[in-house]
Image (cartoon, rainbow, N blue to C red; front, side, top):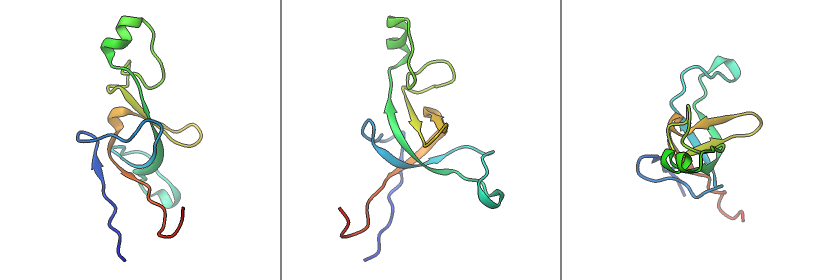
Length: 101
């Protein structure tokens, strides 16, 4: 059985809060092994609040639309990696291999 991964545009749909997914970024300066541009990462989606909601409470939190984060969500990878909402263009659900639960 052949499986085709389905990339989802963030403008059309977002993952569930705290769901770990594969992301595709618009970064142009991140290099991995062999100096290859790495734009695919595993990250967890974190929903935040809109700029209006942040202004109403006068305090911001990690995933909120505030400062350099132009969207009310953020993507968190392993270790110190994280991406602002606008840095991810597409995402895909991670589906386990057939027969694995």
